[in-house]
Image (cartoon, rainbow, N blue to C red; front, top):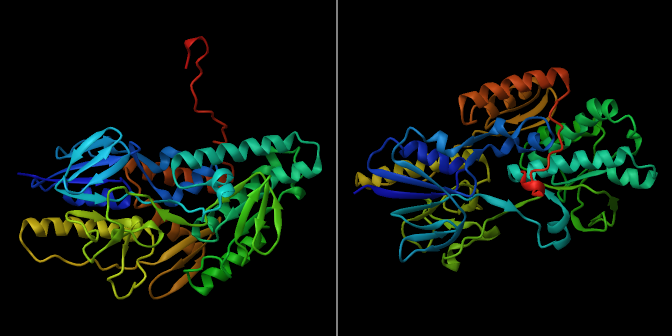
Length: 424
């Protein structure tokens, strides 16, 4: 009998697990995801800023695995796990498993601030990125026709909460858009009223990276005109005012939230399986504590057994990729009745792009910045994309856009059905 591997979540971890198992006839695999496509989160901010199309970083699951007869796809949301019955309930039906793998990723953490949850703009998936793109463009259209100086300034102000790689990259992209595009395409707007704020509760940007990376990001963003506020957490967002822990307030219609993540809630697991930040506690083989045949991978799991990472691994793509491959190898070892291999993370470094031709790269043994780092960033971010066409298309688009400084996809689209006269 083929062992049924049921995977919930088609991110880096789930996709790499499938790729490592799909040619082994001892397994049949079912992937469950609420979307019908895989997407590349590190480039989501470029979709949100109208720099690239969503299709550049997305790929349909059914097309991806169309040549693998032992891989099936089921579109749906996980509702609950029944560990005793070895089944899961989704909003599209009940599925049984021999091995269950949870790779659902994370969602935005608003730290219990209800007004921020309601009104801030997160950027964790394609839908949120497209909504943010629409919001920014609509807000600038409002500013272009607004005659009240105070209101115009409020419309043009943008606040980014979170000084990690996503916040830094987003700030650099928006600053350059203002420099190259806004003054040309929005002549009605007085750019002297526009302010871009990057806010972080910590004393530095890019806190997990090297001092060189922190200083470079800070200085370059300052050069671009970004107003950086450190040691100042967002405490509330009331009536279009961002309230900071240092007492400062900023009037804005656009609060972009990149300030933290939390594990997605999974119903049906023992309480002892849930750790800090709602992440699922796993052993050295990624098996969820207090369960049998239930595993967790990537951002949603918290492994405390590796000596180098006593507080858990960083929530990075490389961790998810490596865990997916290691678990696939261990599933094969179980079938072969061999000894399992514990997961050990191979840190390949981290990086962030700050602006055009400028990035920072931290490798395990040395760090560098500038144009060489920028080229490295581009290369590293093209390799993991799913689909050869996506790689070529993105490389071509980047080449054109970085030369012209003028992306042409700033379209305000309303994806809703028009029910009048029966049309859609």
